[in-house]
Length: 283
Image (cartoon, rainbow, N blue to C red; front, side, top):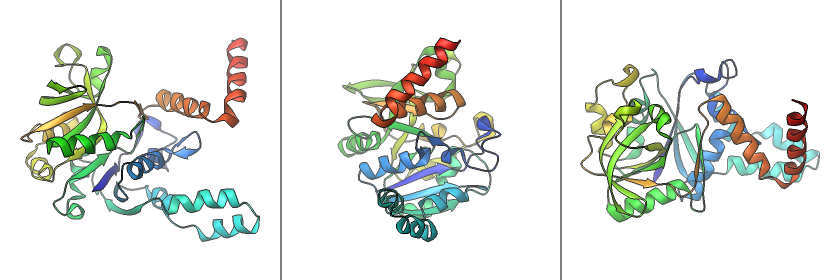
C-alpha cells in the first residue's frame, strides 16, 4: 500500500513564519511535523510515499534527501549519533513528489497522485497533523479496511463548539469504536452537526475515490472538498482512534504539542517544568 501526504497549502495561519517555508516543516520539539507523519506511515507498514507539494515546498524534499556535505562534516567531527540520525531520515522510505499547480482544495491535491496509485487502495495522511497511540493510527485504519473491504477514516470526538472546524459524520456503531457512515458534512454549523465525531486527517481509501473527486463540484471555500467526494462512496467506515491526534493547524495547538512532546524527553522534562514554573510564578 502507498500513502499520499498532501502538503501543498500556503499555511496562512502561521504567517509570517510560513512565508518562505512550508508549515509541514515547522518543528514540533526536535523534528519537522511531516517527519512524524512519515514515521507513522513506516510504522504502519507503508514505505512507498507520495507527497503532494506546491510552490515554496523545496525544503521538504531537501529534508528527506541525502546531504553529503552535512554527513561528511558530522563524520569528520566524530559526531556519530548525529550522523546516524541524519542518515535514518534519508532511509525512512521511498518518497516521490507531485506538484499541485493550483490551490483547489484537499480533494484536488489527492487527485494529483492518481497516476501513481495504480488503481490500488492507498492511505491519505494530512501533513499538518500528528497522531500518537499504542497502535499507529494508519495501521488501525488498515485493519478496518482489511476487515470490511471498504474505505476507512479516522474519527475523534470533539467538543460541540469545535465541530465547525472539521468534517463531521453521522453513522451507526457496528462494533466498538467502528462506525458504518451514512453521512459526512464539511464544517457544519454547531446546531446542524449530525454528531461530534470529527474526521481527523487519516484515511485508507479505495481507488474509486478518484472518480468521486472528479464528479465533485467546488464546495466550502470554493474548493474541491474530500469530504464531499467521500460521501459519494458506496460504503465507508469510521474508526474512533485509540490514541491522540495533534492538529498542528494553528499556533496555539502547535505550541502545546511541542511542549507535550518535549515533556516526553527525559533530557528536557525537568528543566522545562522548572522553566514553566518560573514563568507562571513571575506572572
